Length: 479
Ligand code: SF4
Image (cartoon, rainbow, N blue to C red; front, top):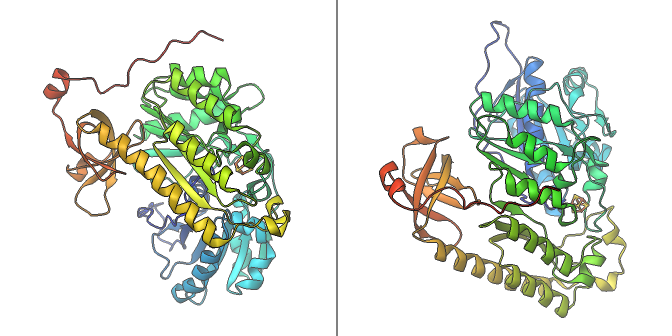
C-alpha cells in the first residue's frame, strides 16, 4: 500500500563491517541499494543476511562490489524511472565480472522486461524469491540470466537471520502481501495475497533483537492490523510482543482503518510498550472518492476510527497518507479532504499527487476523468499548506513540554543527534554520539514547525517536574 509511505532512496544504510569467518579466502562482496518503503529496507536486511550466510561480505558502496543489487519500489512511476536511470549509472562501478540484479516490487511487476531494458542486469527477483539468491548468483556467474517472480505463499524467511543496519530499532515484517484491492495500488500485484507469520516466530525474533541490545521494534505489514496467523490476531500479537522483557517501544505500520477491531484498540491501550502514535492512511476525505479508490470505508467511518483510537489512547499522535488528483476528483471532493484534515488535525501527512500505475484498475477509468496537471498541482500546494499549518500549530503548542526520546543517529548537519519521541516527533538534541541508543528526557525548546530541538534534562530536574511517561490510559473493559 502507499500506506507504508516514503518513496526515498535509503542508500545511507550504515556501513556493514565484514564478519570474520576465520577463512583467508576472499569473500565476494555485495552492495544493496534500497528504494521505497520500510518493507523493502527489511527485505534488504534479509537479503544481506541470506548472502552473508552464503559467504558474501556486505559493503556500503557499489564501487568494485562483486554483486550489486537494486531493491526496488513500484508504487509510483517516478520511483521506477529513477531506478532505470540508476541502473545505467551503476555501470561505472562495475568490474568486468560484477553481477547486477534487480529485486523487489519493480522486479516483480516488470519481470523479464527489466532484462530487456538493462542488458547489464543478470537476475530479476521478486519479493518471494530471495532465498534462491545465492544459487541465482552462481548461475549468473556462469553467464546465465534469471527471472524469479513466482509467489510463494509459505515464504516468511523464518530461518534467515537478517543483517540489521539500524542501530536502535528493528523492522520486523509480520505479514506479507495484501488482500485489499485499492484501485490505485500495485501492491497486490507485486506482493501477492496477504499471509501472516506465526506469532511465536515473531516473538522469537523480537526476543533475539532485544538480546542484541535493541529496545524498539516496528512491526511491518501492508495492512498490519489485519494480521492473523490462524490462531492469533493483531491484538494477540501486540500483547505478546509487548511482553518481551527489555522491549521499551513497540510501533507498527501501516494499519488499515477497517481492521481496528475493539480487541486491537484495547490491546494498544493496555500494552505499555505500544507507542502513542498511529499512521492511519486516509487517502481522501470524500466518501464518493473513497468508493472510487475502493478503500472500503466512508469519511464517517474514518472519523469514527480516529475518535475510538483517541478515546482509548490519550495523547495519541496521528499521521496519514493522502492522494490528490485521483481520477474524477471534483472541487467538492477535494474540499472534503481539506475539511477532514482540519477536523482530525493530523500531526503530519505523506501527501502524493496521483500517479497511475500500469496494471491497476485506476488506469482503466475513463480518460476524461483525468485531472489536469495544473489543477492537481494547485490542490497539492493547498493541501500541503493546510496540513503543514496544522502540524506547525500543534508543534508550537508543545514548546516547553518534556518528553522521553530515543536517540537514533547523528543528524544530517553532523552536529546534533536525531532522536524520536514516543509520539513520533523528531527532536534534535545536543549530545555526544555515544548517547545513540540511549533514552533521554528532553525539554522541547524550539521547532521549525516540523521538527523540534530539545535540551536534555537532568534526572533531578525531571523528578521535580512533570512525568515523561505517557498519561495513564483508559482501562477498557476486557472483551
Ligand atoms: S491495496 Fe490498498 S490496502 Fe493493500 S497495500 Fe495497496 S493501498 Fe494498502
